[in-house]
Length: 237
Image (cartoon, rainbow, N blue to C red):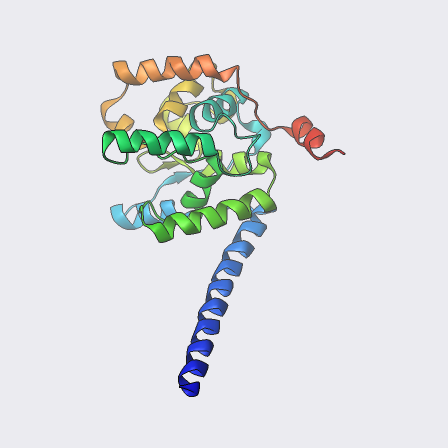
């Protein structure tokens, strides 16, 4: 019995050590994002593997992204982005209630930081383990990076169309413009594509999607977006 307990104890400690090593690996990858732009993400690599072809991706710095894009995306995906610490509990409760009413998962309630964690390192699966790891990486991102940096990386890596990743590629793909020149209406349209970017490449604008664009435009002036002035105020005593 003593020998069995010793081996059980060693096994438990081994599992803990492996788990901590695994999380430190994630923490290192998150920390380096403070200075280095990602060359690809888990979702990009998955797309390349599934479709056996490359993807469009071009990094553009935060100051060269239209402010309309920043406002539209925050208004559409995470209105409380600058105020929360990675999780919007109100949205999560609302999404859970909606899913219960529908009897299936129709709403996720994920914040921009949670979406970024998934896109960078994880998979689209809905397993408990994936969601747990997403939550851990979300906390790492919120701890290691500023809100501005999180939004900058997010805008540069999410999918905006079939094989189109990042706002610069999206602006050129959909409007033949640079990310810096996107208008308010165009920004609202791009934000409306985020939940199902590949579908819009196939069917284009619909009555429902244009209605969503109108809603996003109405919310854009009501949200805060991170910028250098906001971040300086946020960290001052």
